[in-house]
Amino acid sequence: MKRMFTGIIEEMGVVQVFDRLKRSPQLSVLAMTVMEDLAAGDSITVNGVCLTATGRTDKKFTADVSAETLTVTNLGSLKVGDAVNLERAVRVNSRLGGHLVSGHVDGVGLIRDRRQEEDAWLLTIEIPKELLRYCIKKGSIAVDGISLTINQVTDKDIQVAIIPHTGKMTTLGLKGVGTTVNIECDLIGKYLERLLLERGSEGPPQKVDRDYLKRKGLL
Image (cartoon, rainbow, N blue to C red; front, side):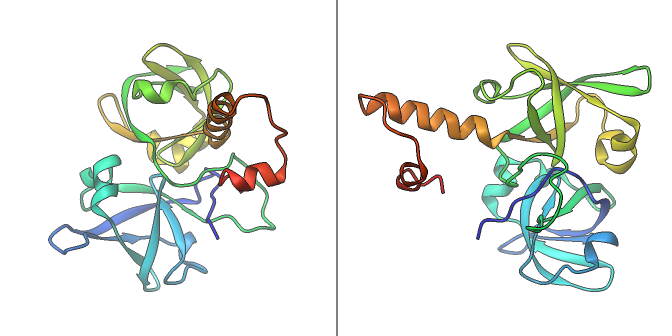
């Protein structure tokens, strides 16, 4: 079963060890809240990246980080003592407070501007152009695993607002201009794009029902 997340960060953990010399680099993170029922084999997002806990103690968990993950996310830049955003996979009976997040990062963005407006911080984040087509004003996006609403979209960047609670509970309260963030675009936009492209290549419109979605691998 595919694990899903909500983009509502449960706590900030701290990198204790990042062993890059192993065949599979291993990350150890100190945490409290997420350790309550986390078991080896469970999924957890670290800065929005879905990882599998390979071991745990009372106060930390370990996870292997693949070469692909180091290539397409900013986890490779982590160092001992860095804070990271943590979220366990959502339970079926939980409230969906943010939006559906898969933990599969689409690309890395760069914070270009940070300014305060009243009690919020406005962040301008430059993201890869191929991801901008999934961004709409008032749409959802996950930034370092945090579910946020897009305020503005230009031809090269997006703007999001960080309220005091989000700044206090996540690493976005610590990150400044020039730092990188993991970007995951809204799943709905990507699914719709695939459906429309494939329907366009199949000639006359087809009925989009459960059977159609299964055939296309969307269920």
